[in-house]
Length: 68
Image (cartoon, rainbow, N blue to C red; front, side):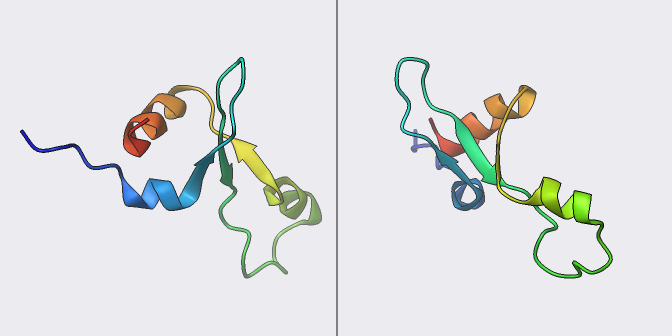
């Protein structure tokens, strides 16, 4: 039986924090924030800036894709 490979695309987009007592978090950057920014509102650009945490049902899928 071969080893299960982790999803390389997910690995490039999501990173794990150090962890600690409560475990690690999965952090990603928002999409749609690179170009064509003039047509986007200031509030929308502010919301897309920075990083966010993977939560909910997606967290289980991302963990599985990372092989963690």
